[in-house]
Image 1 (cartoon, rainbow, N blue to C red):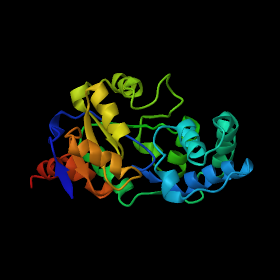
Image 2: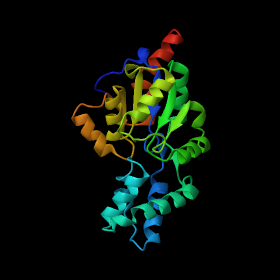
Image 3: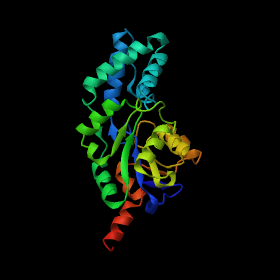
Image 4: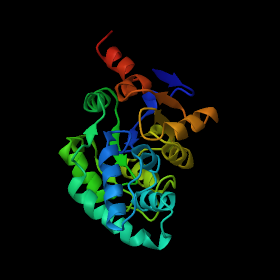
Length: 242
């Protein structure tokens, strides 16, 4: 179901920027396995999948640091544990990772129905992000793919989103940030852009906080609802004379 808090003016839109993990792709199991593999290299106990998944969203370094803190490990292990995580993830990032249902179809509808350009802005390292987008046939939809190491700051800092807006020649009120967490909503607000929250992702609890505070503009329960939430279906029907 689409929940409209502040309807986004689709006729004005020129740019859609998507988060990756928890929004376009379900990478939960591969990320969890990579964290646990890194912990195991230091003799640390495996952690529960839900616990690790709740740490995703602020970049690889923060993910690993949170897992170490949760297990009571020495924080001095963080740099080596991060390297272990990244090494394992490089080889296993596509073991179980899949697109959420409807993602490719919705991206095609948005591309064909709205006069917009689309990009990815994630806190995941950029090289892995680009490889995943290529492997899962996402890459052709996006003119740019940026990761957590593409800029001096990560989301929710607005630097990356503002860079993409400038690259696309889009103003803040012509831009939507699409993501599954408060990080994405706060990024949008910091840049003055619109926000579309996805409740099916990794961080529905943080998105619920944004809804409660009336900080997110539109919320969907499934990726299949993006076009409806952004008014693409109406624009498509109008172009067909329906």
